[in-house]
Image 1: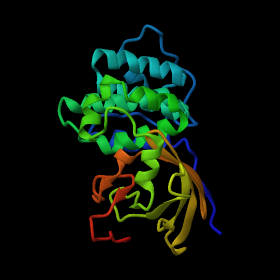
Image 2: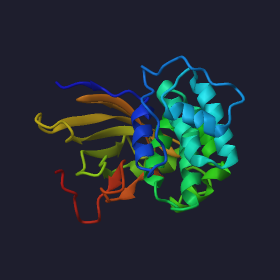
Image 3: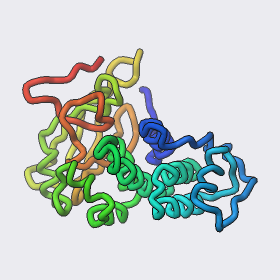
Image 4: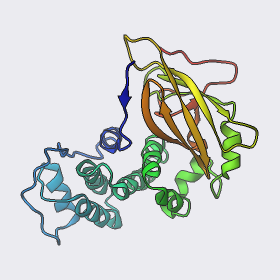
Length: 270
């Protein structure tokens, strides 16, 4: 059996994908486990000085410090510099949910002046992973005015769906994804344990393991207000958060998460 542990904290990879997809939004150098710890930056450094510090690959800053400098840029409206600093914070500490929430916010605010909605699908992926690790960020999101335009574009209600409504939404639903610019790599069908249950099972196929055939994908899910939490324990082991509003119609060129196939059609898996 091919077993893979998918770390819940996938922010480092997501942040790189987000930044490179945002034109020239970020130029952060390698700042992962080998992030240098010298060349400390003064606490009163300007937004641009902090951004350049990261661009040059200099270290000495914790995730909290990078997030604080990012907020300095964000407050000034320098969203591209803010994104670079929030991205670096997430790479220093992939569990630093505040900086990644702020990264999503900076992406939304920075894009709205020029390309409203251009990167909403990538923002969604970041937010779902933030909410998985920090439910408090999920509650804040619904009242955060910085995301007003984003919620409107995503046709989100004024408050999250009830757990019962979420369970009913997923019951009997078949989804495909993720599909980052290629054919869909997974299929999953959700079933409620019984008509009023707030939990159920999910079964499907995982096409992402080339050369190994289509692996069985199965798990259990539970409904919470506005989302389900899926614990996969088939050929892959991972935990995932899925929100109903994040499920798009089939568009592999744009959507990195789960989607519904067009009515009467099934997407190809190649």
